Image (cartoon, rainbow, N blue to C red):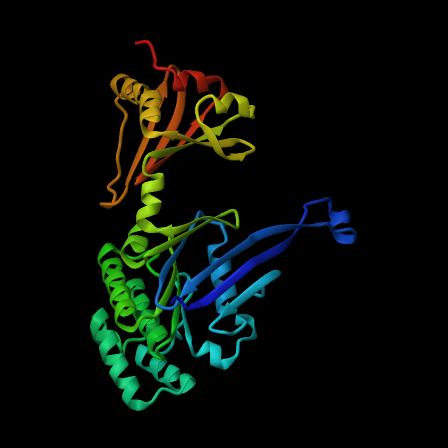
Length: 359
């Protein structure tokens, strides 16, 4: 029988943003509008699960993480973690969770890692035996023993992040929140941290909640994926199912120089996202290949301006700056299981782009 230890029901977080007006109106009659960072989401996480929160920047991932860890107070909805309301910040709750944020340091920069660990020992009331055993085991797993007496400010980013993980696990938490723990790290450091997190999760049955833009983090560490977009959950299932559902689709984003009606765009695929000067459409791989590859071949054969920066083994970036039938545009492609293509194009050239050219 499953025992959820994280329960979220219709969670909402709104921010008030001032509307830009004239100086005098802003001074005496300010107006505000509500922006929903997290919009009515609900999910449960069982003990021992490893779950990833995915989504674009601004989707609400970190906001959700902060509400679960007690850093933010929700606007509405219910949050229950280990039987506590996180924002009460009770010591009994804080002793049972760990938090690592890739863009924030949890270690005091003027102290050494050993001194930081001693401080954590006093705060969490860790016994001498448990403290020595955990420090020795965790630092050996991450191969950071030689950095324990080096001032934190003198450590590299990869070294510091490994020691941040050690510090977050010293008190043997039941839940570990990880907000982009591998951001900015080299490939070797990322691989070691992924293996470490997987081993720790399997050995101690700790519950992991991870946010990341690196799909290797998600594939190697997590069993379940929750995709958040515009503050709402759009997918909640296993990683293999996510790949099966979206592997046969491509997403084409047209960034326009002028406004154009939806009817013009709908002819080429299903509109999944719409902004004032951009549309994202969903089309099959064969359909996009049929419609677009002629122009890629035509542009490369005629102008031969093509470059591909080195990418990792799980994704590839391609950038082309070329001229097509007298029109200059840039094309950036991200190949990551499903293909996301961003194209800058004038409305007058949309028909020409999709129709195979006559050469």
